[in-house]
Length: 100
Picture: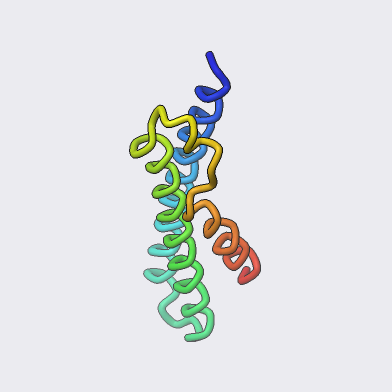
């Protein structure tokens, strides 16, 4: 197995785990809105904003993964570059963490 296999395999497994965790976050957000209808608007807005930011983060991660595993599969020159969504993932993730 080559180093490329290790890198792309780790990327795929990490994205699959991230999607499962995103699904859990979505369910928790839904349950929150169903069970705590009387919470303050500020708290409800915070939960909704965090979920939207996590959705954007997951979309960028999926797009990044798709670019490396599908669009540029086998392109070793592309493997040395950082795709544009890869540069956006960390600031969005930082905003999600900072908002908590």
